Image (cartoon, rainbow, N blue to C red; front, top):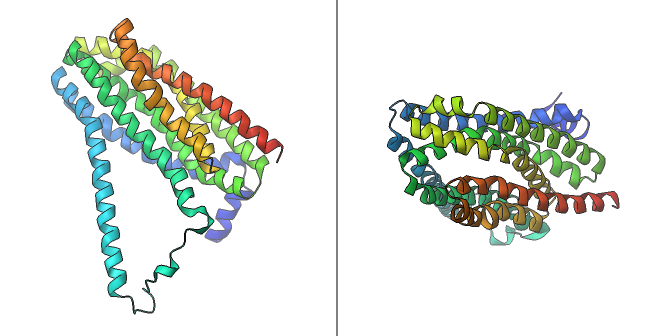
Length: 319
C-alpha cells in the first residue's frame, strides 16, 4: 500500500479507533517527552531539599517559555527574510522564480492559517501569563508555597498535555471529514476522541486526589513544600476532565474553521476566567483561591464549550 493510499484509508475508511490512534500517538509521545523533560529538572533540583531552588525553577519556567517563543518567532522571521533575499537573487532561475503576481490570498488561506494557529498561540501564551500571576500572588506565603504550587502544576501537566496531544493529533482527521462533508464519520471521531480524553482526565483526577502527597514528595521532600503541594494538587486535580472537554471542543472548532468559537474558548479559560479569578479568590479565601481559580475557569470554559458545541452539532444535523 502506497503512502498516499494509506493516508486516504486512514482518513476515510479505517475504523475510528485505529485512525485516531495512528494520528494521535505521535503527538502524545511528543507531549510526553516534554513532560519528562520538565519532570526531570524539577526532580533533580528537588533532590537538594531546598524549597527556594524549586521555587526559583517554578518562577523561571513560564518566563523561559515566553522567551523561547519570542526567540522562535524572531528566528523564523530571519529565515523568511533570508529566503526572500535568496529568491530575489535567483529570480532568473527556472525553478526559484519569484514573482509577486504568484502571491495569492484567495480561498481564505490566511484566515484558515490564523483560525488554527492563533487560538493555539493564545492558549499557550495565556497559560504562561497565568503561571506568572500565580507565582506573584503566592510568593508572599514563602518559598515553600511557590515550590509546592510549581510541583503540583508540573504533576498536573500529565493530564493537560496528554489530552492536548491527543486532540492535536486528531485535528487533521476532523478537518478532513468536515471538509469532505462526511459528518457521520466526523461525529464518530469526536465522540470517540472526546470519550478517551474525558476518561483519562477523570482517571488523573482520581489518582492525583488519592496520591497527592506521595506524588509531591517524589519531587521534593521538604515538609512545607509537601504540605502546600498536596493541597494545591488536590484542588487543581478537579480541572482535568473539564479541561479535556475544552481541548476537544476547541480542536473541533479549529478543524472546522469556526474562528470565533475557537478564539472565545482559547481566551476565556485563562484570559477572562482564570487570571481574574485568581485575584478575586485570593482576596476572598486566601492562598487556596489562587489554584481554585483553575477548576473554576475550566467549569466556565466547559459550560461555554457545551453551548457552542451543541449549536455546532445542530448545524451538522441540518446540513
